[in-house]
Every structure is written in structure tokens, then in C-alpha cells.
Image 1 (cartoon, rainbow, N blue to C red):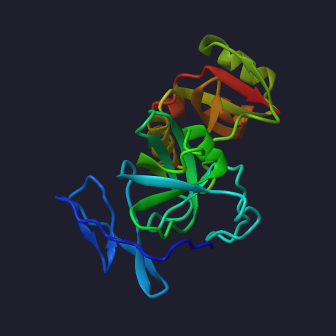
Image 2 (cartoon, rainbow, N blue to C red):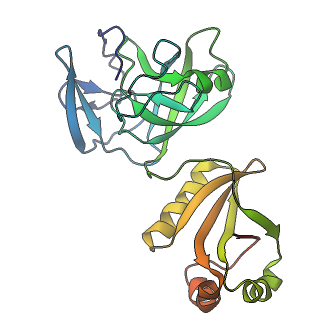
Length: 254
């Protein structure tokens, strides 16, 4: 875990709620949220909150790079300045957030894996890669908006790798599954432009105990079901329709 300047000035604006002892976030909300735990940095107490999807915050973001590259983060992993990660004082670790640069409208999704920045008036410290995508490396800081997307441990938005995929229409899905009945299969059941929309679908299916995850594909975010054996999917197609799973556009076999 790395710390910068350990002075932090809390700014009070109308409609901002005071979260716990000494913890304040500039969020557009009139709710209070459950405290998960608190920690101290040089006598200053910060409280981590169990915030919901859609939770927002607006403030100044900075970035950190070479001086911390290869060192441990708050999650006990090694900081990689080329990964899309960020440091935040009070969001739960491993939370995924969308960061919008309000100065140029560029956006990116990052995972919170560190604590900080402990500098006055700053709410987020981005990795070098994330800062570069948002166009703030040269300037050093920018006004941003943070939107909480979720905290699923395996919700990495990586590109699809290591599978052979083919496109099939819904009309032919049963025929294809019968042909590859002994294969492991992933089904793309939905495609979204918005990460937040995809995340809502993901959470809905997770609550119903489905194997599901998200992946980027051609500038879209796919909701993928599986992996399941093709024979298992065939047996459950009718049952799954009750859960609104009745549109299959792509099938992946491996």
C-alpha cells in the first residue's frame, strides 16, 4: 500500500452525508451505507462503505506510475502500472468503477485494488494505463465522475481468448448443440453497449445460480452463460425460458 501526502481536507457541500467517524464522500445521495471496516493512516481514520451499484462521486483524480510499479497494493497484489486499476480511500477493494473524465468525456472501467490518494481534494489515483486512456497523464489531474459497477471477484472485462467461436442463429441452436453434445459450451445470451446494463443482467442471472460472466467483444459487452456441456443445455432450454433466457446469438465450443 502506498501513501502520498497524508493531509486530507474534507469539503462539505449541501446534500452530502457524513459517513461514520471522519469519513466523507462527495456523492449524490441522501442515504447512509453499512460500514465494512475502518483503518488509520498517520492517525487519520477512514471508513470503507458497502456501497450499491450506481453509487457516484465527483472530484479530482490523479495517477501514479513508475515509483510504485512492482510494489504491493492494499489487496496484497503487485501493482502493475499497465493494468486498469485505481486507488480509492473508502470504496471496497476489488470494486469495479466506471471513471469519466469530465473535461473530455473519455471513460474507462477500472478495479479498485489500492488505498489513496491521501492528498487534499483528490478522490482517485489511477494507474498509468488508465490515466493514459482518459487523457490525463500529461496534465497530471482531471475532474472525474466515478460510477460504481459492482464487486464481483471474477468480473474482469478481458477480451475473449482461448476459445474457438462460430455464429449461429437461434433457429439452429438445437441442431448445433446436438452436434456438439460432448463439448463444453459458452452461450452469448445478451449484448450491451453499456457496462452498467450488462452488469444488471449479470447480477440477475447470478442470483438465479447460473454460471455467468462478462466479456468484451467488438466494442460490445457480452453476457456469457456457462461453460456447460451442450447436452446439459439441451435438457434445460425450456426451463431457462422461464428465466428470460431465450435468445442465443453466439455459441462458443472448446
